[in-house]
Length: 82
View 1 (tube, rainbow, N blue to C red):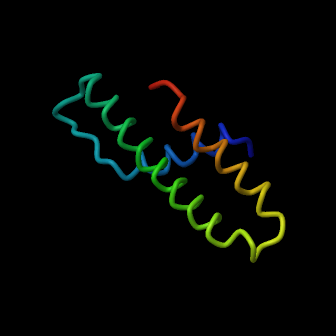
View 2 (tube, helix red, strand yellow; view 1 turned 45 degrees about the vertical axis):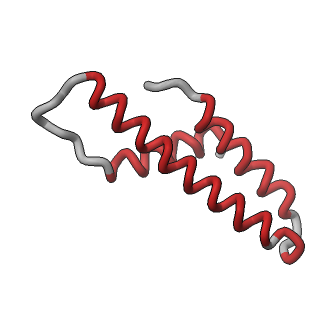
View 3 (cartoon, rainbow, N blue to C red; view 1 turned 90 degrees about the horizontal axis):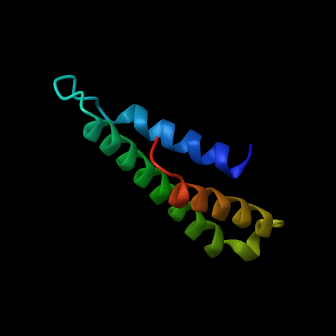
């Protein structure tokens, strides 16, 4: 899975958890839901990166994993709203 695909997957997972206000089906609400989902995914990736960096010496091949999650993090930060 590419970093872009992982970023979209994480955002979609959080988006499922954000209720849709059926009375306010306006574009601003839709954009807000996506923005909150994206921020949640970004927090998740940042926490995961913190953990990886703290345990870097104890795990082999950690560099590739950290680089991958940094790319996912960059995708979440740079992708435009749907």
